[in-house]
Length: 121
Image (cartoon, rainbow, N blue to C red; front, side):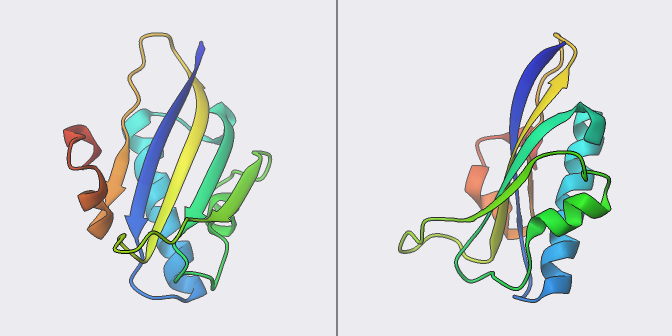
């Protein structure tokens, strides 16, 4: 087993708790499916939100998916002029077999953030 890190992001339709939790759940489920990992494999998750999203913590969704024992941190992205808004990002540290290849996940409008990662789409 070795330690890996992967990135993910998803756009959010509106700034309310239901939309933030829903987008985070979809993102985390897709990350777990594509990488064949679960909460027991995860060391930590760092979530960020663009400054236009403040109705809920993405960690709420992760806890609902079984990440209750995983250290979770939520923070605000740097508000860079012209940057894509209404986006949740995550950085996940996890253990997997040595031959594992991390598959990053970008959903919705956030796909534009990393078009260079074909398998992330």
